[in-house]
Amino acid sequence: MRLIPVAALFLMLLIGCERYEASEDERLDMNSFTREWTGPYGGVPNFTDLNLNDLKSALIMGMDQTRSEIYEIANQSEKPTFENTILALEETGRLLDRV
Image (cartoon, rainbow, N blue to C red; front, side):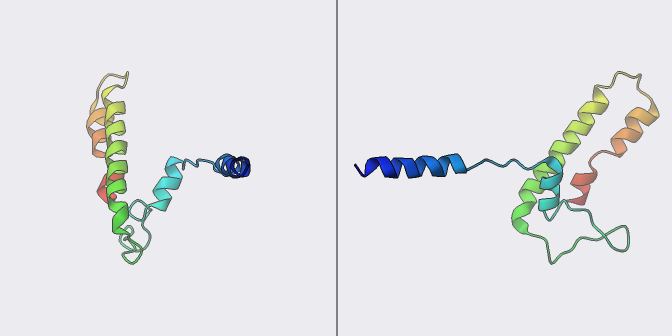
């Protein structure tokens, strides 16, 4: 007899739980290493806010973003030029550089 109320309570808890998937921008803002830097000299990190536990995920995000940027450059339909290849490659990896 007690199994039904316990099972019902457990079912209500499961139904009430919702999986939340953060967007790319939200993940970048939540990570202390990937936030935009502000201040002098083009921005400096807030060293008091840095959390060492965020470093691994920030590095992975930076590598993934750099990999996708290079993939787009390598698979473009236009004929390769200095601007759309060499200069474009120079602009990749900004997030990884910041981390």
